[in-house]
Image (tube, rainbow, N blue to C red; front, side, top):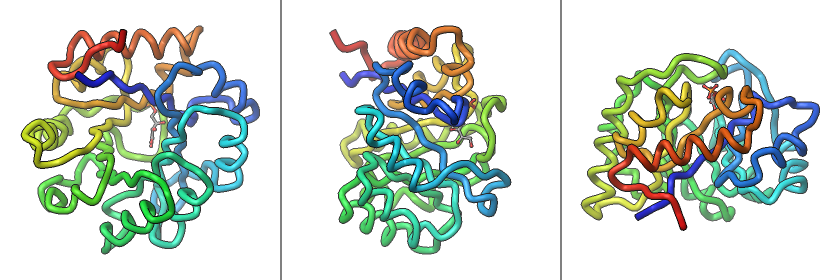
Length: 227
Ligand SMILES: O=C(CO)[C@@H](O)[C@H](O)COP(=O)(O)O
């Protein structure tokens, strides 16, 4: 059985101390990096230079979530820089397969993300081109929002395809994940849990990661804690 993956979102970290904030969650599986362009979403965060600096400051694999327009132009440089995962939005391009192929050719894993209102059915056929599906459980743009449980049907649908061997894919969820919501997501078949405010708002972010992982393992039919 797989191990529950926790990806703290640095959107809720102190941007002036990112190296220390990464060190505070050293046992995490991925570090989730929200890149926002103030066009695709109504917020502006950070870009490639900060990702390049973070890559030098931490050994945690970077999970770059691009909430940007024109990912075909901007996604491959994140892969070339050394990001582990480069995820972009289905709603931001007419040719997600071409973008995924460019990301993989540049050396990173490719992720597809869907907003809460975007159905997954039109994308099922192309998911074999991806390593990760990132299901948004809040409207992208800001941390600290409430979890939207209606999106879990998408995780369930893709989990079935993974369990039946039709797809090899990490199912990831992002938005409002905390001690009250992580179990529902785990039950629905999620493998990787992004958490911003629940980790960086905790007194001990490292302990918050361990607790979320244990909760996910306890609720999931397909995940267990590594021994
Ligand atoms: O992509 C986003 C928001 O658009 C997320 O990664 C948030 O950073 C998650 O924050 P919490 O909901 O966990 O506080």
